[in-house]
Length: 413
Image (cartoon, rainbow, N blue to C red; front, top):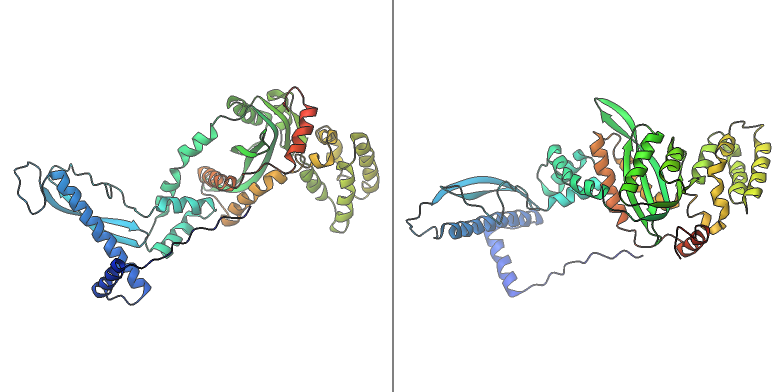
C-alpha cells in the first residue's frame, strides 16, 4: 500500500503578514534564517509573558495599573527556563502574595512546550540511545536534555505497556508463533545475554497480532507454562497450531496448557541449524535435498526422503540430520496441508518483519543499560511496527478453509 505523503503547509502572503514581517525586520535587524529563528524565540517568550500577565489580572480581579483593597496582590516575578522548538529561553513568571496563582498557558513545573516527549519516544522506538537522543536534541533544538530526563520521559509509557500486556485477547488463535531474539543487557556491572521471546498470533481474520513479549534468562517447562497460562488468563481458550524453534520445555508446557494444540517446529530454523554442520561447498546441495523432505506430498513420502538424504549425507556429516529424527513428531503436522498453506505456519515469514525492527535495536545499541530499558525499547518498536499491519496474511482464505476442515469442532467456517 502506497505511503501517504505528509501534507506540506503552503505559505500564503497577506497584507497583515507583510506588515508584521516588515516590523520584524526593523525590530530585529534580520539578515539570515538564524536571525528569524532567534526573533521567533523572543516573540514566543514575550507572548507567553503577556498571556501570563493577563491570567494574573483575571486571577486577582484587577489589572496591573489599577489599585485594589484585595488581600492578594502581585508579588514580583520568578525567572523560569523553557524549552521550545525554537530552543531554550527564559521568561519572568508573575507571582502573587498568596502563591495561589496557577498559570494555564505554561503550567507550574512545566519546562517544555515543544511536544518533545513524543519526539523522544519516537527516537527511542527507533533504537536510539539516550545519549544519541540528547545529542540530537542539542543539534536540532539547541537545548540540553539530560539522559535522566530522557529516561523519565520514556518511563511514562510503562503504565501503557502494563495495560497492553494485560489486555483481553481473542478466544481462539488458529496460529501462534513464538520466536526469540537475544540482546546484551547490563546488570550489576556485568553484561549478560537475555532472550526476548515474542508471542505473535494470527487471529480468525488472518491478521497478525503481538500477544506479549517476555524477557527471560532460562527456558524451562515451568517458564513456558507461566507464559501460556498468562494467555489463558487473558481469554485464550484454544490454539490450533503453535510454531516455534526448539525452545527448551515448550513442548511439555503446550501439552499441559493446551493439550489439543499441535506443536509445529519452524522448518526455516531446522534448515539453518542443520546447515551449521555442513561445509560451505556442500551447503547449496544439502539445502536442496532438505527441501525435498518438507515439500513432500505426504508424511510417508517425507519419511522416505529423510532416509535417502540421511544415507547420502551422514557419511560426510554424521550429526547433521539427528535433529530431524529426534523432532519428527513436531515436524509432521505440516504434511496434512497443501503446499501453499504449509508456508503460512511452518516458516517465520509472518514474524520476520517484526524481527527486523528488533534487530535494528541491536544494531543501534550494543548494550542495554538494564532489563527495563530493553522492555521499553521492544514495546515501542512493536507499537511502531504493528501500525502497518492492516491486511490479513497472504492466502488467508485458503489457509482458513483448510484449517476449518482439519479442525471442524474448533474453528467455525
